[in-house]
Every structure is written in structure tokens, then in C-alpha cells.
Amino acid sequence: MSNKKSAGNLNTALVILEKSIPLFAQSGYAGVSMRDISKVVGTSGAALYHHYPDKQGLYLAAMEHAFSDMALSIQSTLDIKGTPEERLVHFTTNFTDQMARSPELRILLQRELLDGDDERLKLLANLVFVKPFKVIKELARELGLDCDAHLLAISMAGLILFHFETESIRRYLPGGLKKHNDPKVIGKHVAKLLTGMLGK
Image 1 (cartoon, rainbow, N blue to C red):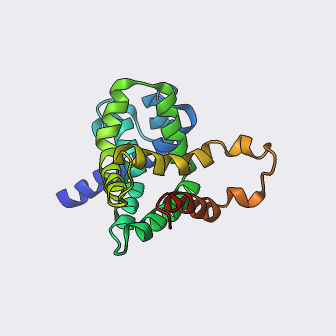
Image 2 (cartoon, rainbow, N blue to C red; image 1 turned 90 degrees about the vertical axis):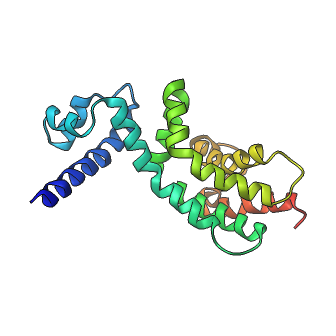
């Protein structure tokens, strides 16, 4: 009986997270109340607070849940065997495809950067982004380029993310083609750009 109750609690907690992610993506942290979330989940405020004692705790748990698949994917992508250059190509194509399929993740990240709440950003960095960043940074170091591995890791992810962040305006720039929004094209382009630095 207690096992069933525990499973029910876990399922409810997961439903709360999954229902709250689109709300936070649409309206941002400040624009969503616990009451809004309880309405969408279809539960009472008391039940909501039973699982998450406050909005910040719920928000951080939602962010961690939202980005957990991405973190695992980055880890598994870079755990494959091969040269650093081969793993770089695998990373850029995989990460680009993942970002293309996860508009909510991109919006959540953009909202956090715009909000600029230092305490939340620090918590998010430690809870969500540290592990995948360390893996990317290690690949950057293995590439053996004469540059700062920390900056290179940020640039590797940033080159991909910027394509999506500017998608709404890029279509009005001269020479823009439909294929420039294709994740495969973007991923291969970024990989070619970075491997070009290696003289490959």
C-alpha cells in the first residue's frame, strides 16, 4: 500500500513539473503563480505545496527536469569512441537536432538570461548546466586548439544556439534560404567551422 502511495506521489510530482514547464516558458518565472500551476495541473494549492514548498523550488525542479534529457544526451553523445574531431561533429549535429525539437528549452533559457536574477542563475548553473558544460569543456580541451577551453566550450554551444535565437529575423536578411533553418545543415555548418580551426 505504501509503495503504491509513493508511486502516486512521484507521478503527481512529475505531472506538476511537466505541466508547469510550458507555463514558465510562456510567461516567465514572475508571470506564473502557484495558483496558475494548480489550475493547469487540476489539483489544489495544498496538494501543490505538499510536493513543492515554494515557487522557486518548483521552478528549479521544473528546469532541472526540462533540461535533464539534454544533459544526458550531451553526455552520451560525447561518450562515444572516436577522435576528438569525430566526437565534435557528433556533438554539433546531435545538439542542433535536440535544440530544434525543444523550443520550450530555448525559451526557458532565454527568459532566464533576460530576467537576470543572479540567485536563480547561480542555482540553475549548479543544478542544471554544470555537468553537461564540463563534458563539452573536456572535449574542447581534447581538440588541442591554442585557445581557452572554457571560452571554446561556450562558443561551441553558442554557435548553435544563436542560429535558433535569430531565426525570426534571419529570414529577412539577404541570401537567406529555407535550408538555413534545417537543423542538419546548421549542425554540419558549425562542425565544419570548428573543424576548420583544426585545419581538417
